[in-house]
Amino acid sequence: GAGVSQSPSNKVTEKGKDVELRCDPISGHTALYWYRQSLGQGLEFLIYFQGNSAPDKSGLPSDRFSAERTGGSVSTLTIQRTQQEDSAVYLCASSLGGGGVRNTGELFFGEGSRLTVL
Amino acid sequence: AQKITQTQPGMFVQEKEAVTLDCTYDTSDQSYGLFWYKQPSSGEMIFLIYQGSYDEQNATEGRYSLNFQKARKSANLVISASQLGDSAMYFCAMREVNDYKLSFGAGTTVTVRA
Image 1 (cartoon, each protein chain N blue to C red):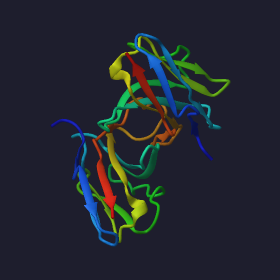
Image 2: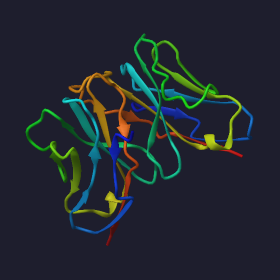
Image 3: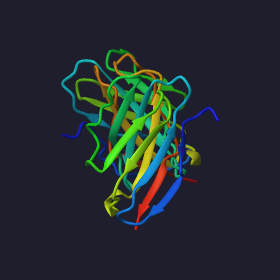
C-alpha cells in the first residue's frame, strides 16, 4: 500500500524478552518518527530520523530502547528486556520534510504496533 | 513543562450540533505550527487541520475550523454539524520553529449521540 506500514500489529511477550517493531514509511519521505501511546493517553515522542543525519534519540525512555533506520527507509524499534510498563501502542510516522514552521506537511501515521508485556 | 494542554478529557455532543475542543499551548517562539489529529477507535491518526502562527486567517477544512487566538495561546477546534463518525479521540499538537517533532496534548474523547 501507499501508507506507512507497521508490523506486527499486535505483539504479546513475556517480561524480560526482547521485541522488534518494524516501520516501513511512505516512499520518498525523508523524516521518520516513533511515538508511544499508553492506554488512553497522548503521544510520547521517542526518536526521529531525518535523511542521513544523526537521529534525535532524546525521547527514548531508557537504554533498553534503541532504533535504527536502514538505507533511509525501513526502521526498526528494539526494546530489550521488556517490562510491563513498556506495554503501549508504538506509532510510526513519516513526513516529506523535517523541521521548520513553514513545513505544513502533516505526519502520516501507521496503524501502530500494540505491545503487551505479561 | 507541558507544551500542549487539552483540559477536556471527554465530551458528548448531539448529532448535527457543533462542538468546540479546547487547546492551549506554551511556547516562547514567535513562529510555530499547530495541528489537530483525529484518532478513531481503530487507532490510526488522521490529520485534520493546520494553523501557522503567521497565518492571519483562521484555518478551515470542510466541517473543521480552528479558532486561533494567538495572544491567548489557544487553538480550539470547532467541528460543525457533528456526525456519528466524528466519535473519536482528538489531539492538538504543536511544532515549534526549527523543530521537527510534534508535541501532542493528552487528547479529548468526543462521543456523538444520535
